Each structure stands twice: as structure tokens, then as C-alpha cells.
Image 1 (tube, rainbow, N blue to C red):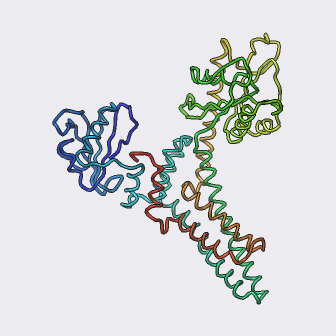
Image 2 (tube, rainbow, N blue to C red):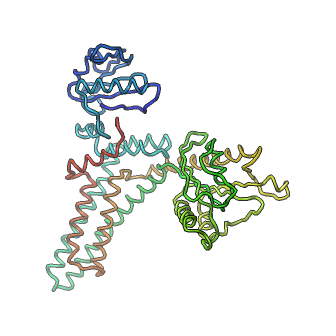
Image 3 (cartoon, one colour):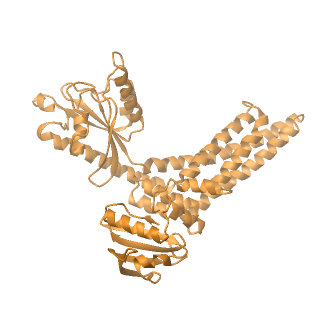
Length: 451
């Protein structure tokens, strides 16, 4: 049993799955017919009224888990939901572990392990557009077969390469034959490397478009980054002080654009052109900010309009600005009296401050819309979208490259047998072969409750 909806909403959905759910009768009354929804008054074991709810029944195997399932749709009052759960537990229900519903669906062959992984990906991927999410759900067995075909071809090539290498080692005195066997093994492993790298590339494209975008505010000390963050939040979230360098660590908030796209917003320590004469804590904050900027999706450059510059006067930042999507926001533009043409300037004070915040949100919104469109197109060619498989493929690729080093004489040829056995193991694991219950259980611990 688990709550399948967020706590505190208008409606709460409790889901119970098992072979025989008749033990719930004292709580919900007689079980509805399969596929039937019934209005019920829920009562505690001591006959006290609890809630009014709609009760639905799904009969095995026609349910998500492949077992009998009862859904109780009641009011989302947290105290009521907790009390209903307590009564169900008193009757014999057990609280589900994270991912247990999906785990049972896999055990009951309602979905494959990779289909369950795709479902978890959807829950975690806030950056996906609606069409990409729909495509992800509809990938189905044809996509799994396509990926498995690549794994099978790689396994066949690895087996052939092992045969060639073993022959080369066993008949080392036949130099011409040995050179031929090694060259043949190398060709096969090069093809394996190409296939595995292609799978990783498709996963990285998907992952890049699926994750929540990160937006970083940066600028020189006392430029107004924290003021801008507070404007966007609508309150005081970051300390503001006339003293330069107030922000040492980064401040992170989660916001949404006008169209509802979620994004991470980070206010970082002010950046100076040099770390000379900078105390240790501030220098550490600057290094952390630069590191985070490397992986950011959008940079917002906050600058004092009285001393505008075309470049940031920091080689690492200037390199990032040349490649990263960015927006410039000015401060103190009101003090110039219109004497300088700054283009489209959004000031952080006075009448212009709401425009500055809106400009950032609109800019991020446009970037997210464009990225979602790109992501939808990129998904057309995506092959690997399972994080579990990605980790195994990455390990397999590492073993492949080490084996190639052995064949090229960069490492001892005698260790290649162990490398190829590990490579075979990783490829079979990626196909879902010979997975232990503990391994499968570990996968599902990453799921959320009620799924």
C-alpha cells in the first residue's frame, strides 16, 4: 500500500496491490466489481466515520502490477490520509517500498525492466516536453529490440575476438598467424567500440534535454546579483549589502517560467579578474561559481551600467560567454541619465525592477521552449535512455578500450582475457541477463513511493 499522489492536494489516491484484498472490507465495504467505481463511506475498525471516497477495483492480471489492485480516492487532508493508512495497516496492509509497484509489475511480466526504467526517467525528467514524454512512453518493445540487437552483435564480436586472441596467445611462435589473429580481433573490437560509443552519445543527448535547466547569476562583486535573485523570488532569499563580496557560497532556488517550465536558479559569489589579494573563503567561492557555470544552461550577467564592458575581463568567463546562452542585466542605469546607449537595459531599481525580473523569466522560458523542441527532435534518434544501461555500457566501453590497448602492445596481451570476460559480463547485464534479485531490487530503490 502507498499514497500515489502528492500530500496536501485536493484528492489523495491510496493504492493497494496484492493477491487477495478482501481484508479491506471492514474499511471500504464490499469490494466493487472489477472495473467498477463505487462511492463509499470509510469507517475505522471501531466503526467511526473517516471519509467519503471513490473506490475502484482492478482484477489481476488487468492492472498496473498484474495483481488485484484497489484504489481509494478520498480527500487530500493529510491527517485523514494518514488515518486511513493506519486503519489499512491494522487490517493487514504493508507499506510499499519505493518502486515496489513497478517492481511487482516487472515480476508479473506486465512490463520489462527497461520499460520500468523509462517510467522512472519520466518522473525525474522535468526538462522533457509533452511530445518527448509521450514518445518515451511509446518506445515499447521495438526500441528494446533495437538496443538488444546492438548488444547481441557486440557480444558476438567479443566472442570472436576472444577466439582470435586465445589462438594468438596459444600459437605465439607462428608470428604471421599471430599478427593476423590480433588484427582480426582489433577490427572486431573497434566495431564494438563504435557501437557502444553511439549508444552513449544517444543517451547523453537525451539526458541533456531531459534534465531541469540550470540558470546562474554571475557578475563582479556588488553588481546586484543578489538583488536580482530576491526580485525573482519575490522576497529576501539572498543577503544584500553595500560591502563587495557578501555572497561567498552559492544560493539556490527553484522557480518556474511563465509557461510553467521548472528551472534551478543559482546566485554565485562575485567574480574578480584575479584571485590576488582575495581571502581564502572568497577565492573558494569564486572557483565554485566558475565550476558551476561550466555546466549551466543559461548565464545571466549582471553588470554596473556606469562601467560597461564588452568582455568580462576574466579569460574563463569570456570563453564561457562565447559559447553559452546568456543575458545581460544592468544596474544603476538610471544614474546615467540616458547619456549612454546600453541597448535593451533592465535596471534593478525603481520602475525598471519588475521589467528586469520579467526579462530573465521570459529569456529562460524561450531557451527552455527551444531546448524542448530540440529535445523532441533528438529523441527521434535516441536509442539508449536507461541510466542503468548507460552505466553498464560506459563500463563495457572502458573494458573495450583497455582490450584494444593490449592488442596494440600498450599493455600486456596476457590480461586481455580478463578484460574481455568483464566486457561480456557488462553487455549481458545491459541486456538484462543473469541479474540477481538484489541487483534488481537496488534499481527500484531509486523510484518514488506509490510507483
